[in-house]
Length: 177
Image (tube, rainbow, N blue to C red):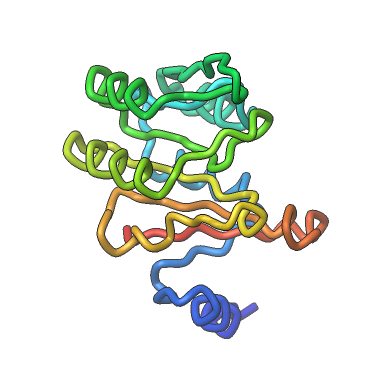
């Protein structure tokens, strides 16, 4: 079927250009598409731990080197400091950094300023940053405002959480690349 009307309506709703949008069969397929498109055998992929299991599975499927960002126990719950992430990415220079925001099962989230700082550092070393916004708009902050400024940003969303449409398997990817 011709999906051009759906692309135009969703793009208008999201206030993005339709060419910055890719419809997928759920966020999971959006993540897989990012791996298929950008990850080659031996590429380094950074991901949080614990997190959505498909990041680990796709790293294995595409023979990527997985670099784990383990959460640290704090009085406010599990956290990963931005300083720790930046130190790892500057040292390892990964092809892809996968950050669910907020992350599940920990509930940890990154602020707008933290995401912007991370995008700047990642851009300097040529790393792509995949922000998984599966819980948007339950968690109201979105990295969408950074799409035009950071060509290394890829956002994945789903309609299964906030919209209760899991059975439809509808998701999308937002990016400038």
